[in-house]
Length: 214
Image (cartoon, rainbow, N blue to C red):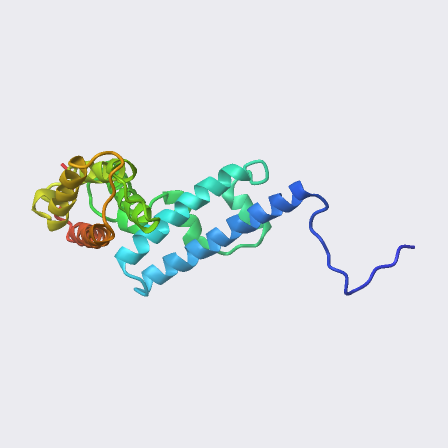
């Protein structure tokens, strides 16, 4: 009869492929738990809409990416949560809706509006991430900014938003640069500051319920 030690580590895997599988499943588990905490924090007003929206968008994006990597092991998210006894109803609802609560309840204009708000939110996040990663050249930033300015144009009243005017001004600045030319650190810092303020203004405007897309 084989003997074993109570102090011996019990392994879930016996190969590198199995280890990778369990690591991916653990990451998916963690994303769901994090999303649930975020949803509950937002409901309790522990985080603002400006803080909540990009965090939720990023977690939903990570969830979708992770689900593709474990699709052979996870027939459905409900089965996964049942298997690991996960009681995270807030996260499950957000996953099924597919967009942050700020987008889901942004207006009465229907799913098309939600799609536009989600896309513009993602454009803000992508541009801010690019600046955080120290991308400075025109050919590294121009496409992200152009996409954001295009997203702004879908909303009624956006021409009166200060943030849109500043984004257009930065687009003009980039248009006047050579592809390889870079923003100075001072310019990049101001650019990021302007994007952050435009992002906050964007969500304040949505919260007012008066800036629906045309």
